[in-house]
Image (tube, rainbow, N blue to C red):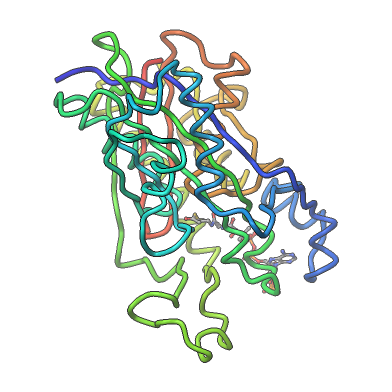
Length: 326
Ligand code: ACO
C-alpha cells in the first residue's frame, strides 16, 4: 500500500457578506443571540446565478495550481455536497467538464458535513492500492438555497463556499495515517431536507409545507456532535497508535463554537491549536473543513511533520475523522 498525502489545497467563498444584523431584519433574532449561542458573526451567500459547481470550479483551480498539476493529471473527482447543482448529472461531472479533466472519472458523495472527510478516505484508498495516482476531493455547498429564511432556528447557522484538495502518493509514514467513518441512520430524522426526492417528490403541497428546506432538531444534533466528535477522534488515534498529546493541530467541522470547544476540551487540545473560522463563514457543511485547512495551511499554522486531526459530524447522521502527518 502506498502512503497518500495532500499535495495541494484551495478554497473559494462568494463575495457577498450577510451579517447577523442583516438577519435580524428578516427573522426574530439578534447579533447577540447568534454570537453567544453559535460563535457566528457573518456568512457568505452566493449570488442567484451561481451554482455549487461554480464554487467548486474556483476552489479546484486554486488547489490544482497549489499542487502544480494540470487537469489532465486527475484520475478521479469526488465532490461532497448536499446541495448539488441538480440530482443528476453529478456536480463532480460538471466540475470535470468545467476544468477539462478529460481523464478523470467523477462522482458525488452525500454525507452532509462529514462528506469531505469521507472523500479523503475514499480517494486515498484508490491511491493507496495503486489504482490511481491523483484524486481531487472537493467539499462545496450553497446551503442558502435550501434554507427557510423564515425559520430562525436554522437560517442563521449556515453559509456558502467550497474547498478542494489534491491527493497524491507521498513519502512513506506521512500523509493519511488513519481514519474513522461512521453512521447512525436510526437518528437521521434529526436533520433532513424532506422533499424533492422519491419519497416526497416536488409538488405544490410539498412547497406549501416548506418541505424543501433544512429541518433540524438543533439540541439533538448538538448532543450527537459532541459525542461523535470525541469518539471518532479517539478511534482514528487508536488505529494509528498515536497518543492524544501528539496532535499538533485540530481542524474540526465549523458548526458551533460551543461544539468545537467542547470537543477540544474532551480531547485536551489547547484552544490555540484549533482552527476556527465559523465567525466569518458560519457552517458550510462539507466545505467547512477544506476551507479551514486552506486558510490554516496558507497562514503557516500547519508545518512539515505536524500531526493534524480533522473531525466532523453531519446529516445521516454521520461522523468522520482523518489523522494526517503533514
Ligand atoms: N435567534 C433568537 N432565538 C432563537 C434563535 C435565533 N436565531 N434560534 C432559536 N432561538 C430560540 C429558540 O426558539 C428557543 O426558544 P424557546 O426556549 O422559547 O423555545 C431558544 O432560542 C433556545 O433554543 P435552543 O435550541 O435551546 O438553543 P441552543 O442553545 O441549543 O442553540 C443551536 C441552538 C445553535 C441550533 C444549537 O442547538 C446547535 O448548534 N445545534 C447543532 C446544530 C448543527 O450543528 N447543525 C448542523 C449539522 S451538520 C450538517 O450536516 C448540515
